[in-house]
Length: 456
Image (cartoon, rainbow, N blue to C red):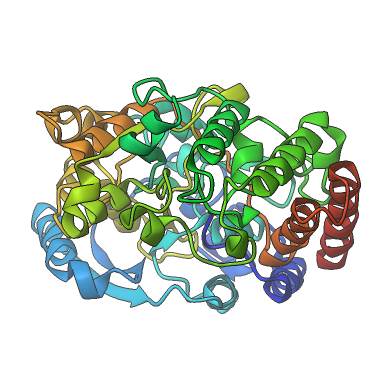
């Protein structure tokens, strides 16, 4: 399931702020004529041309809910940067990352007080890029993308007010997806654990085999489709939204109806617990109890099973989540951006690149308190991700994700909770037999379009 989506009300707030501040990046002949999102800035921060200037001065660095658990690490990074660049100082602040995160940062940007270096999600980066508040990193440092996985860097762009795609972010850390499954339960159903399916419908066929074998004693997975929409659609290369994001188009693809028909069939045949259709629970707990064959797709979950359920861990294996028609996985990274309103942009850009370089990304990924994945090619090739010994399924999961990230893109569909819930509710009706799959898909698209139209 995706995280960090916008609420419907927040979409409206952001739309208003973008209308008010959407002058975009511009440059002028003098400092007083240069603006970024309505704020007066140094002329070197905007327009064409590489950013130049002395790396000296004080900046503010904002993360999202990291200070409590990773204070020692980031304070060390800051000290290393300040030592390498005498005359600089970095003040670290930490935002809670709650539901008003985007609204709060847009307000700061409008007040011309956006932190110099800021940790953003895709939604907030979209809003700030469109309004012209972020440094165009691809222009200000043409070499900025070199450390990163090429496909990840290429896809990590956001559009300005004119619709042009800009590199206003550096991809930082990300998660990953794996199949986690109980080999004993798969074998009972006649499924070879060593040959995970390559398509979503192939995975559904395995779910059906488990339902027929288990006969209600255990299940394949949980029923609530909220965990699968729009993730499955993305992997199947079903276009969920139009290119401008203003309308839903998933009903135009016949595979969407096939997907809903499969979900209804699996629910009816007992592949999923009946009481899990509207439950917010993912498979994590029932998997550790041996009640479902497939666990959470989050690789950090494998470590959780290892620590909390040794008997189930001994039966656990990991496999590749089906690439299906897309042919590769997609990531939803956290980003690092530089404010175009920074008074010390050369310092801010230097720190942003230092923070996200291969050395610092690898070091943080090795922290025992976190399961994250870096976005630089060098980091993903580190022995920490590549060396697997014995039956260490957690290490295998790390390697699997690291390898799939080498070809990943940042193209994930982001739906507001309201739009996602509208689609999910119609699929649930089809799963209960209250609507045909075709009608559910048609109604889901209509309801999604109503909400998208309201959001502007």
